[in-house]
Amino acid sequence: MEDLWQTMVRSLSIYWQSTLRINAGAVLGSLVAALLVALLTLVAARLARDALTRALSRTKADPNAALLVGRVVYWAILALGAGWVLTIFGVEWTALVATFGVLGLAAGLALQDVLRNLVAGLYLLMERPFRIGDHIVLKDHQGQVTDVRLRTTHLHTPDDREVIIPNITVFAEIIVNRSTYTRPNRGAREDNSAGIQP
Image (cartoon, rainbow, N blue to C red):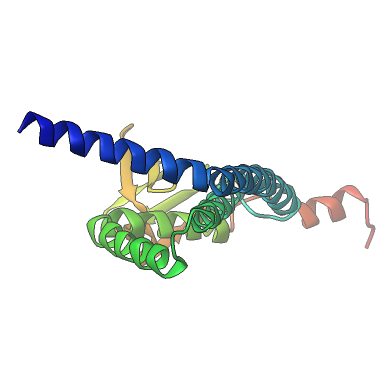
């Protein structure tokens, strides 16, 4: 039995040594190509994120939303680069797509409520139906908006309490914004300060 074990170990050792000698050049080439692709992907992801963040900062988009979109683009490019690296080592694209599809479906079903709140939060940050400091009424709650995050909106009520409302509720319900027409009108102020005489 011991001789059989030694013979198997010796045979496997000879097989691996010959395989490594034959494939050493191919493995080294694949490794160099994979490192180059990883480096290029990292640089491209950073450049795309920074360019998109700068472009969105010039618009009326909320800074938090611009940061979020930049991060999503960054991670999407990194995921594509990781897929490219895996194909260099012989993994098929169809297997990758199928694997990511199954993982995405499982994560989507498991995190359905969290994802709905995130999407609603992103919509609120982009659309901005109210601003921080506005006094709003939402369902049974009213108060001053103190913070709008990706998952929740925070209100400071007149009786000095903080109400944290999931963004999907804010997204789906009717909002009364009591501050919309009480904000100072910048255009009217400029006309009055210009000293227009009748």
